[in-house]
Amino acid sequence: MCLTFSKAAIAWAAMNSSNTVRLGVLGCGTVGTSFVQLITEQADEIERRTGMRLEIAAVSVRDASKERAGVDASLLTTDSDGIVTHPDIDVIIETMGGVDHTKALMLSAFGSGKPVVTANKELLALHGPELFAAADTAGVDLALEASVAAGLPFIRALRESLVGEDVSRAMGIVNGTTNYILSQMTEHGASYDNALAEAQRLGFAEADPTADVGGFDAGSKAAIIATLAFGEAVRAGDVHIEGIETITADDISNATRMGYVIKLLAVVEQSDSGAIAARVHPTMLPSSHPLASVRDSFNAVFVEGAGIDQIMFYGRGAGGHPTAAMMVGDAIDVALNKRAGVHRSVGELGSAAIVPIDDSVSAFYVSIDALDQPGVLADIANAFGSEGVSIRSMEQENSTDDVARLVFITHDAIESDFRKTLAAVSDLDAVKNVGQVLRVVCD
Ligand code: NAP
Ligand code: HSE
Image 1 (cartoon, protein in one colour):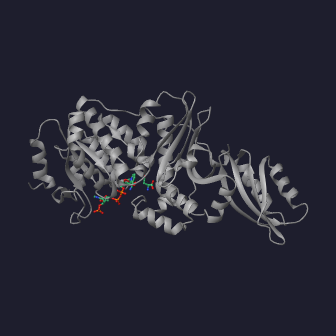
Image 2 (cartoon, helix red, strand yellow):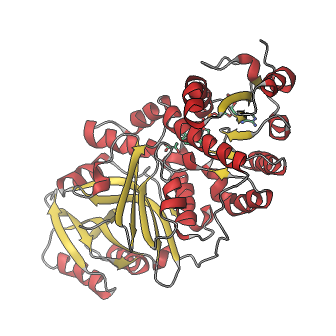
């Protein structure tokens, strides 16, 4: 049977029973290919357990002549616009990435009464509030389980189980590529470049891996988590972002020696006043912290709230199959909702104030090279004290004849006070270099 997108495939699909749900898939790369494979493999089991037969009606790509493992070539088309408006396609699965054109396609799908399942955190972090509102207006679902921490069912928990919870903070390892790189560097002494190349080969990295290593991918996910955890519109631009490019083997061995691991964390917090802080940065975590044991491309999100105390979600954070598995779950959900004539809304999002990074509070690690002479440590400690930054611990290491490396960890401090401290320390004649600065989660 020849299933070209525009006619035969749709006609064939339309001939099936009314329990058939026809899926239009946008994109057939790492995630899209896995999605098509999973639907093909699981269709009988899904039908047995849900009463619905999910079928791939069409798949859009840029290059329809390229072979894709397990994907019927006759389903391929370059006409994404045609898929989202086709009357015989019921649900849109968006795995193509991108922002402007993809947003237009989603709006067009909503306008045609079709729910959308997406893994596109970049788009959601930039335009999520508008897209949620457009889906509501159209009375259809926008399902996004795979957009944050790919293979762990965490968004559903935020949108359903935790919607009545007073969540105060979520801290997540939400980028598989960077967690893989840091794990390889920590556990196997791998070089940053080799570990990144391997993450790309394994299909974890974004098309442009600077989105991963620069922290932007985690930043998008932080914005989505904050939006859903607090019911407030938080966008990519509201998130302070630092990546892992400056982390060296030295930093990792220092952290290990001191009983910490370095992880790229996304942190979102809501204060009692309602203001929201959202940031992404490499962080020193005590090796006893539950997030410290999250290795390889695994992700985890640690949520704290008034009633729940602490919950941690853990799973594969990247890769075709884990991501596609969540999208299959979403496809079933939105199809069931469509059949029932309902959709799930995120409600009316608020517009809480965003805490500027200068006002945020954290403990810090800093390494300082200074002359190994009487009075130098006192001068440095005085600079900390003058800005109200309290020192939690200090170690002296790697002394050469006349220069010592001093490693400080502070108690919680306001970011701007800590930055002023560093400026004052740099001005001391005896200080030769202010080195790595990392935020620290204390025991
Ligand atoms: P990918 O391997 O680069 O695949 C992208 C697919 O979209 C390709 O098949 C490409 O076609 C197609 N495409 C791109 N632009 C298109 C256009 N304008 N029209 C039609 N087709 C187009 O990317 P991916 O890794 O699967 O990621 C896809 C999305 O999932 C992204 O939003 C990503 O952030 C998200 N995500 C990825 C992962 C992961 O582990 N990879 C995990 C969670 C979420 P061609 O094949 O013809 O070039
Ligand atoms: N590039 C992303 C990561 C894919 O490494 O986590 C999952 O969103």
